[in-house]
Length: 136
Image (tube, rainbow, N blue to C red; front, top):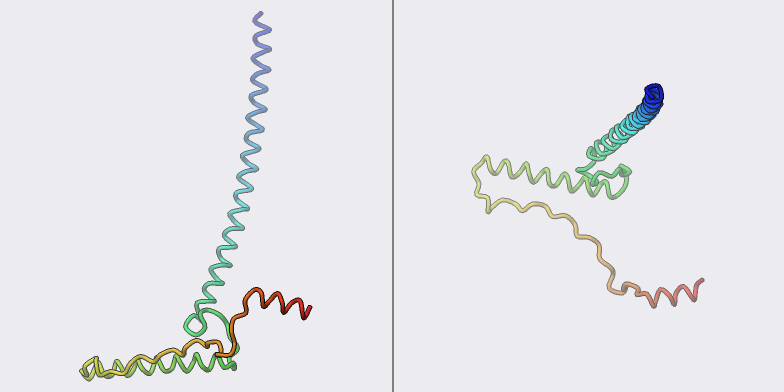
């Protein structure tokens, strides 16, 4: 009777030990997976940070986008920036001289966005469908 109980207890203990070993292996595998995921996320975070840092270097001129330095957009943006800086310097000089603010020059305005020419109208869906039928 006691031998049978000892045998049953040993079997259940061995079963419990194997279950604990399997659980430990699963936890070790999960920890390794989390470690590699963390490394990957850190790498992505660094790449994103570097991308944002690089973008912010040009944010004054082109909203963070690179441009060809010889383009018309660059010269226009540079001229706008120079106008604003000259205006700020003029305002500082006037402030130091004690001139009333109401007599100061107004801030340079940005050029208006281009508008559609009067003879060009937006195309509606029906016109697009007819154009496609004729030309395709």
